[in-house]
Length: 202
Length: 229
Image (cartoon, rainbow over all chains, first blue to last red; front, side, top):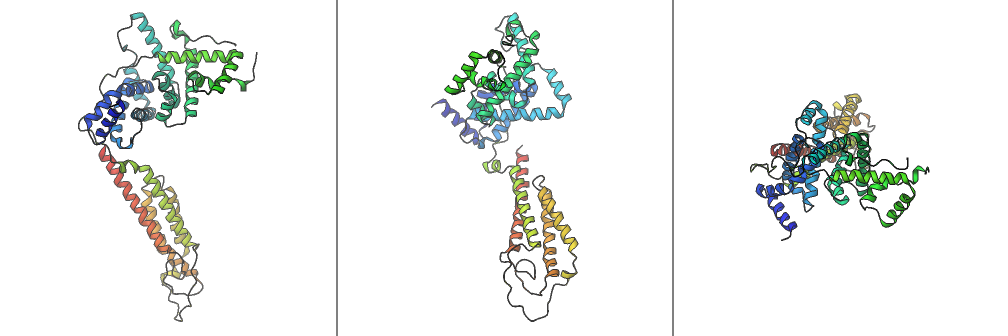
């Protein structure tokens, strides 16, 4: 059986209410799902809430899957959960500030393999990028994360965001430029080797 | 050297970076880049930014997101298709249609059937008819109309629109008799005194029932969804 068939077998069983089968899918996709939420929301607790919400909603709505690509469908649900979090955070600004302060997602390096100086630099870079991503409007942020942080192609991004290719292209372009402009204002905070090239022709 | 703003390829650079341009488009961008330092700089900075993003390490989740064994099961498809939004829309549409039919009835816009020869018996108009002033009828219809148009926004007002629509009905049937010149005792659909070619009264009733059914369905679906968590 191909991996796709295996996955279809799992979704079929899950659709019938088999939680164990669904949890196998959770295990397979919780990495990308959590990462998307983390980069969108900028805080680990909020990302955990959104990811859990998304998996609960995915299980509840499994019957609307109908042969579509599971990963795209799931990530769409995660993106929606993030939008909900952002909306409710806007309504309770004190709460979200507390969350942002409570856990810095880049505080702990994901693996201890890198030596100290490099990991400190990488942490600085990650912090700058996260701050930059936070300045983007949600649509552009989502496009940039899906494309450049998670590596999905335009077609998959279009499926996940349910928009046309042209929209993906324009959001990605605007998001990247905005992020680049932000990083230019923060050059001093970036480690030297990560700094942007100076502008040419000006 | 300064180039016309319009010829810069800034908006295409992302797509160019991602290999999303067709061959002729790519050739055009490359030709421009060869001549334009500003766009070359733009491309370099974009490429650099994307490179930085690609270096963001994937974060490991601190916990598992596996669902508990008692997680609420998948909802049946019919429940998923009947979203509250769609049901509210259906309620609103049924309400508007009902109001439109009542208004048309009030203004006797429906095609009238030719009247048969009137009997010689003296006119026996329903007593409340002529005495009923036109005022309350119009206000009831007016009250129904704004409530009907507001229905798509909030379903709870729809039943009220239905009820005031129903109240406007008997009033509407009474008022035309006050203005009908010839006394005609016709028990056709529509107002006494006016015969419609179409079954207008049945239509109003059917729409009213349809609207009530959709509202009941909406309440049921909402209850099921809330219960499912």
